[in-house]
Each structure stands twice: as C-alpha cells, then as structure tokens.
Image 1 (cartoon, rainbow, N blue to C red):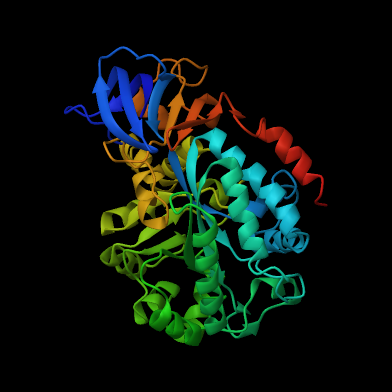
Image 2: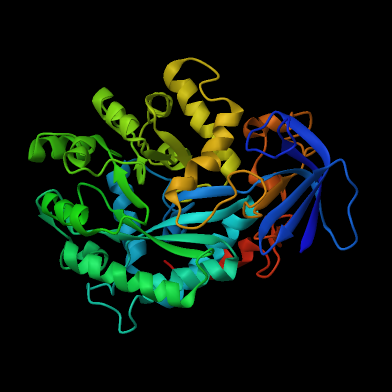
Length: 452
C-alpha cells in the first residue's frame, strides 16, 4: 500500500471526492492499493514515503474518441479553403504512409501527449487494419498490437475500437485509398475481432488494454452488415459509430433507406446504453429523441468539429433528452481536456445566444464520467474508495488560472496547467514531461519526420 498526499482536492460535503463537486478540501491523503484508492482522508499531513501532489487534484480525464494517426495533420491542413471532404483526402494520404513500426512510434508520442495533458484513458477508433493494397499483414493484428504496445509504453489505458469499414459510401465500394480499412464482409470482421480480443487478452493486462467495436458510419457499413452485427456482436464490449457528422451523410441515408442514420440504427436495435454515437452534429428533433430515449452516449469533439467546419452539435438538447455527453479529441488539432470542455460550452453559447448552457460541473462530468460507457478499461470518473487511482493536478496560480475558483477551471485552465498525472497510483507525467519517455514534443518531432 502507498500514499498520495494532495495539497487540495475537490470533495463533496461527506468527504468523498466527486467529479465537479463544490468544495475544495486542503491536505487530502489517498491510500492506494494495487492501483486503486483504498482510503480517503482530509485535513491530514503527509506520511513518510507519500507522493506529494501540489495544486488542485481532479480525477484524470478520459478521451472518448481518438484517431491517433490524424495527429500527422496538425498544422499541415489549415491553409486554403475547403470542407470536411477536402480534408478527408489529405487524411487518406497520411493513412497510406502508415506501417506497424511507424504507427507504433507515432502513437506512442501521441499517447504521451495525451498523458501529460491530463488524460489517463483513450478510446482509439481504429480502422487502418491491413497493408495498403488491402491484404493482411503476415503478423496477425500487426497494426492493432502496435497501438496496444504504444499505449502501454505511454502508460495510458486503451480501449481499442476495432472498426468495421466495408464501403466508401452508400452503394459505393471502397476506393483504393480505403482498401486497407476494409474486411471481406461483416462475418470476416467479426472473426478477426474475436481473434484480436484473444490476442490482446493474452498479451496485455485488462485494466490497461481492452477491445471494443466500432462501425465506421452508415456510409461505411451496409444495412445487411448491420443485421449481421446485431445478431453476432458480443454484448460485453462497447460499440461506437460516427453518426450524422455531415449533412451529405444524412441525405444519402434518407435517399437509400428512407430514414436518417439514427433512424437506421433504431430500425435494427442498435441504439442502446452501450452505444457511443460520435459527433451527432446534424440531427433532427426525432433523432435527438431516439438517442435520448435509448440512453446512448454522444461523444462530442468540439475542437475537431470546429476545425473541420462540421457545425455545432445539439449537445444541450441531447443531454436534456437523456443522452450522456462525453468528450474526445478526434483528429487532435488540440489535445487538451480543458479546452474541449469549454469549447463545448462556447459552441452552445454561439448557437443559442445564451450563456451557461452547461455548468462547469456538467462539463467536467463529460470529460470523466460521461466517457465511462465508452470504455473497455476502468476510468477515474470519481475519486472514491475502490476507484482506480487516476489523477491530474492543476496549478491554481498560473497566468490562466490565477484567481479562478477550482470548480470553474473548465473556463480558465489548459493542459499547460496540468502539473502532474497519476495513473494506477503511479506518477506518469510531471510538468508536461512524461516520466519514462521524456518530452512529448521531442517524441512527436522524431515520429513525424517519417511522414510527408
């Protein structure tokens, strides 16, 4: 058993720490056993051997949607005009350059950047499965295992979402650029998913690496494939899908199937509490009600949706209808949980003309508890006995946070204010530097040299 002493931490009136609580307690000591919190004490001095965390301690954030290789595009795709579809062609060119070795190096750097920014877990929406021409690698699951090794090296908890991707659009085969994303059919994907789950379970600890499933979108998965997935997908893993990110997707779906993408999922019984719908930017009122009634999680990626000019999703309406809101960094134009929190609220303000659409507590909830259903690994949704000990400490006296109430850091803090990150009770990052790997900036610089 070990101890972590926090200069301050958010706690509730009963003395147990909760995400977004209203009281800040000084001198909080956490007892840690096997990576989990076994005791919480307030108003106490540190004991010999305790790890000392200065600043205000929060549960670490959870990144509910990531495409690690998209980090290649940061600072390279922002000139000129265009839209999501123009950006997508640039993204495909980057995907074509990936090999298992290059991807492991890149993903290690990206995951290290996430860790120093305050994330302790990530759901990686992964579809670059095969060699560029579409044939499998000689080593089974070469790309997937490279990502798992990268996560272990960075110390981040990984939910590896193996993605079904069969079509280039509704009624359109995969293009040559998409060939490495696909499988022969839904059954071949299910077989490969089962084999991947076994390989990961054999090689990695389940509290650090788990496998989930994803359907790329209704553009990328046929209705017949949806039927196969409904019948055969194991029920004990999370399921994600890109949903209604673009108006063109909705128009094509209505034309082909007579319903919106959300309506198509409802038709086949895929809307449920285990489903995480990513983006959900362009929804009808009926879509919002369908997702809310099902209790589905909606993963908003505000910085990406802004960068790609996707639009402002109806987050407040979805939450009011019964959906859980989670946050992700998607294409990594920014990797910063605090920025995602306030960008969600700022989008709501710009769209509605009203302030306070989400409270700071609700925003922090989206960055932690909201992602719980999206993950196959545990996350520190609250700091309580038996929870995993995943923490981030934030400086209350930086040029950004000075004078802020810690409960309102969602409107002032950035990843630059994260002074320490603890995962499974171990210090993984300190003042922007990864304890084992060093500066993520250096790692990224070296990894990105291998891409044009």
